[in-house]
Image (cartoon, rainbow, N blue to C red; front, side, top):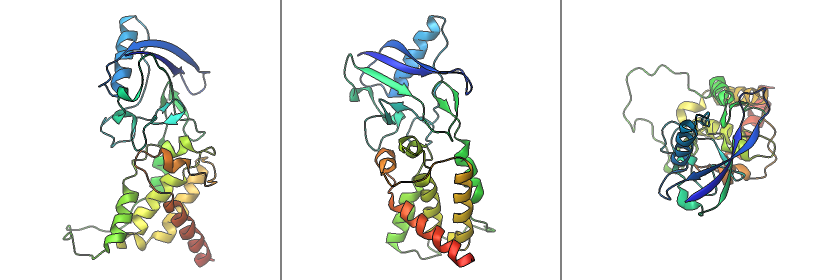
Length: 247
């Protein structure tokens, strides 16, 4: 496959960036990241600086492969991370535009790499359970209804990649935050601190500079783990209830 890549290059957060055009030959069985590896090998052999992009597990688990491909976070295939996206999803001779996440709360570090530590700050604000674990309990020591457990598991599949923020016209982190809140709120162990948790995490989300949710639904469409926006409704109910109960 002969491809034309238009890749965003930017040396730092305070430096003006621009799209640069490259030609690359790829195999249809390569993943998108492997194709970028080939591009970087070509650039290095030419004595040029390789394109910086984030990656780790390359198995759709870690959420670090945060790229906008042809205007869509993680590319054209729904429910797929960039590392799981294969070049057979594209056509020979196609021009592909590759950009980083675009959000005020995700400042660019270099090229396609952004700083997502704002997500870490939200988790640190309340995305945990304060209990003395002691010896591990048996798996079925606390009965949980199947439907509730399934909802909690679905929310827990969020990998914190930030695609929801990149897809949102307001740069909102509500889908991410609501998934983390819902996961713990649905479990008996997490209900004790639920009211404090939801207030702290929402406050930190606002402090990090994320935009407001206007329910466009783009976050759900682009989420590689297909997290439901019903979690946002659950967060809103929880937040309002916690504020009213504390007054």
